[in-house]
Image 1 (tube, one colour):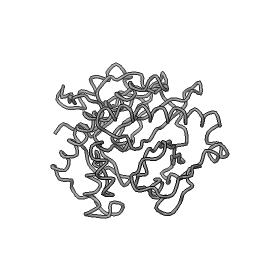
Image 2 (cartoon, helix red, strand yellow):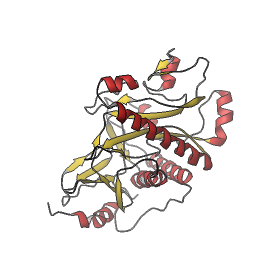
Image 3 (cartoon, helix red, strand yellow):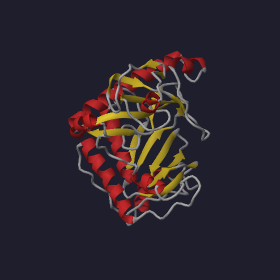
Image 4 (spheres, one colour):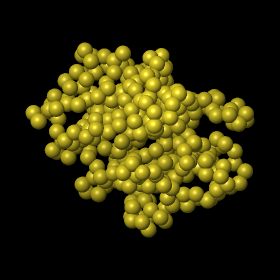
Length: 316
């Protein structure tokens, strides 16, 4: 199995390790972001999934290119299939989630809140009588605070965002316009590929001039919920979850066998790892309409990444 477990490269400056990405800040104000194959859940690394980093980087690349006319993004170049060189941004403290359906499982999801009897949420009023996984009258934005310190995200209304000075009124209007336009484009393209883009998360930052820039990733299986279009109608009538690209195989397996917040994680079976890799690859191919071509040049993925990033070495 060709796995990029980590990408610690001593010749690159200003190293920062994220849960699944290795980051290096360059003197010119750009950032090297290397997507490894690590999979994270429960605030810890569970295992590595072959080609996951390449799949996510290339899926995001597809969408950044498909939406470049809507809003600026952080991408400068792609020196390697697992690597993006991006503008270094100040990330805005509001996480933007756009939802087109009454779905979700987290405490901040609109389905969870709706089932508790809430109808007013995120500054929006939803009508009575909606069913699980029903399409909303129109897509909505459900912003949350972005917990940089490891705390929990909290629901916000547009008024609260401005009152708490998380964003200016002008910034909120710009983010809203960008997010809804990106989601509309995403749903239109997904529909052509037999998919429903149900909901998605966007992250924005500002550059040195204060311009709002789309960052991180866009419309990937890790940041978005996709349903298979042909399964939706029958599933909705049966009140069952539509078929999807489920990235939670590993997470569900772990939960069945231990308390992942307290216990040691059992060794993940190789078959489960490979099945999850296949899900990511199938997701890439259906989302983009392209065939996934793994880059197996060089002896290892890390050797290939190092070779492609040599122009950025500082000798540090």
